[in-house]
Length: 122
Image 1 (cartoon, one colour):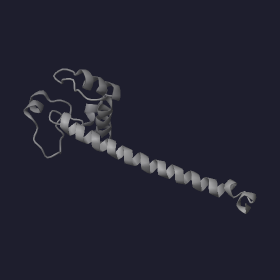
Image 2: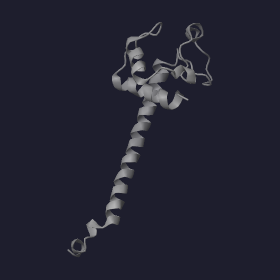
Image 3: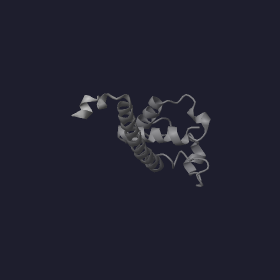
Image 4: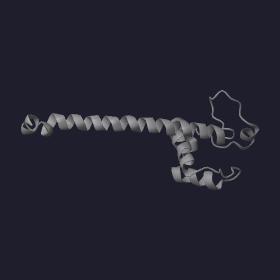
């Protein structure tokens, strides 16, 4: 009972410490979730996109398709001009030019875009 009488739980230090502990836990959890999304996006990009969208510096040879049609290389900053998330989603879902539509779930498309914007965009 003495703890309550002294106002221990209303102590500013206790409140600040508890708040920081909660925020720290949330940050760690968010980083873990983002890491999983990033890994999923990388895997999906390599499986569905990289064959055509050859990446410079990845130590592989470009496909004949890449050599002929030159789809965007997302490691090139010029490739990002005029692109935003909505435009990328639209192209992935409907296709554009020689690029066919890709049959992926919305969360898979989001994971690919997250990977592209965090790893490839410079």
